[in-house]
Length: 194
Image 1 (tube, rainbow, N blue to C red):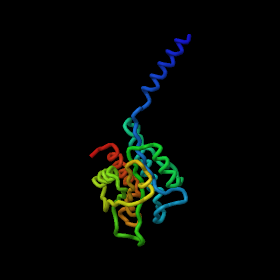
Image 2: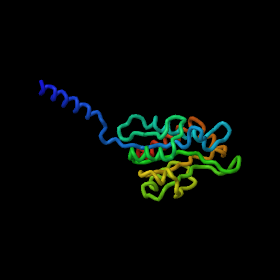
Image 3: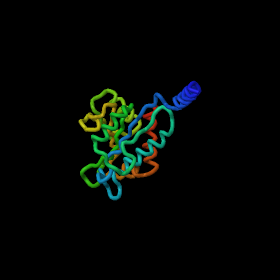
Image 4: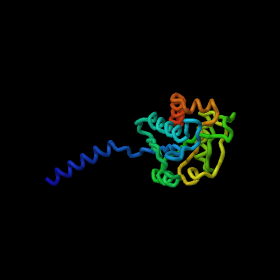
């Protein structure tokens, strides 16, 4: 009887392990702000909602493929602290981190437009920024000392997706079609599609 039980356990363990992705890698998408912290605001539009919508769309579009699992630092209107976010990220040890934000300029309506990418000084983060540069209308890539970049061990970038107080950027980043296009570009970057 003991031999049969061990045999059954052995078969179950083998079957379970064959369905467990042993080499699954993580990509973390950080939707900036959240909860009472709306981030940049223009009328009814807020950075926290735009970044969350795009983060969710990235996760959805990446789907159930076996290479990478997209993890969100928040998937609801919550506001984990920066320390909580980076602790969660470092525990996962992801391949890359993309923190999504929306820019704003001091004036009510600005001629400034386009994507801005911020990196810490790691070469891997700079390579990731270069991939984003190729996919988006990037105004600039800049090294900066931000908590999300400094405290994350994985290659990380903070991406300002456009200016909420620029009419063309705002129309694009708040539109469902625009958000899906943005998300698709990130999925292509994640999966190494040129």
